[in-house]
Amino acid sequence: MKVAVIGTGYVGLTTGVCLAFVGHEVHCLDVNESKVNALRAGQIPIFEPQLEDLLDAAKGRLHFTSKYEDAIPDAEVIFIAVGTPSLPDGQPDLQYLRSASESLGKYLSASFTVVVNKSTVPIGSGNWVGALIRESQKAAGLHTDFAVASNPEFLREGSAIFDSLYPDRIVIGADQGKALETLYRLYRPVIDQTFPAPAFCPRREGFSAVPLVSTDLASAELIKYAANAFLATKISFINEIGLLAGRVGADIQHIARGMGLDSRIGNRFLSAGLGWGGSCFAKDTAALSATAKEYGLGMGIVEAARQVNFAMREKVIERLLDILKIIKGRNIAVLGLAFKPNTDDLRDAPAIDIIRRLQSRGVIVHAHDPIAMERFRIEHPDLASVLCDTAEEAMRESDAVVLATEWNEYRELDWAMLGDVVRQKNVLDTRWTLDADSLRRVGWNLIRLP
Image 1: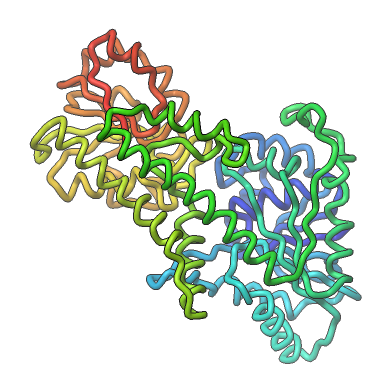
Image 2: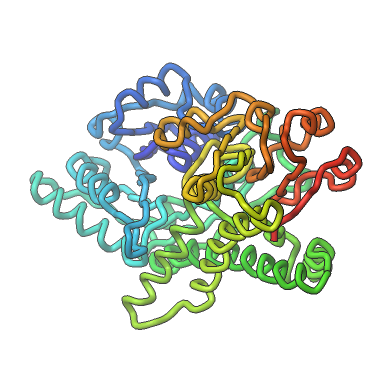
């Protein structure tokens, strides 16, 4: 099928590359011409494991452009995968969605086109996008048959290729049966797993089919918000239990295991620690609460999950005060900047919030990340002076080390040797990733969060 993808960020680029790999002809469109030129040259603007390999495998069916007139005409399916950042009131900023909808409407020419909201958008956005496209067509003197659908993404950055090729489920929502049939045809190679698995991302044994959830437009839009809000709540719940466990002398890891072995609960997203960041959970929980308010409803559980999560960042400061008593003028090393390992995504990364809080208290901060530092320099130029080329350099003469992102590189550090470069052997492991016995044997004072 002929496919267009508007937006080449984490979601758009992964979606386009994977659809091309399974056999479709894909045009990826981005208004940033320098980004398009880089992609044409095989340079990927984000860090995502295996994406470069898959792009190379799919390049015969994959095209990059900055012009709507190159990508939109004749496309049977058009994905809108643009950013929807949060506004101060929690509602998502839909300016990029509006621009994409109005722009594509001028170039629709296929006999029937499905326009798919891949971006996470508020309930009702499908109707709004449809209205924008119709107005755009009217202004251009066009009238073509199209339908708007919702196909929310459930990708985990760091394993986005695996999640795209072998998903837990595919959700499609539309109010026209013809649109649902089109999307079924589009995803059939993935649903039936008929494509050859790439050697660098093998299919797990016994995996032969993907469940398809076919529903109406509003339900598909709400499924995405509900799923993310539930996962965010699960993380916040175990952190709240972790705070109580610390007070009563219980082991939160044993508690999480005891809970997770219950098949009704499951062990995923029960890792106590610093909590969630990234582009999805904070934005989607805020949007869900804001939407509920429009309908006179409260989202008490979701709001509580948000409060618990963001409070964990202040708990880092409290733990450092417990250790050092006075932190003004101290040297603190922060290891890890990305919101999670195996990505360079810094959106709502807890480490950045922590660095700013420490600096506001007069702390001298040095930081390191194995992948995300170049993006950090671009997105947070006012903080660029904290960056160090190596973890050792960041830790030199430090009074405490805060491990904020669980990169494997930090597990494998020579902590015995590093004990000779710090001023005090204090490490706050906010991700429960370091081996406590090993560190304590070489003299480190290991503290964990919560």
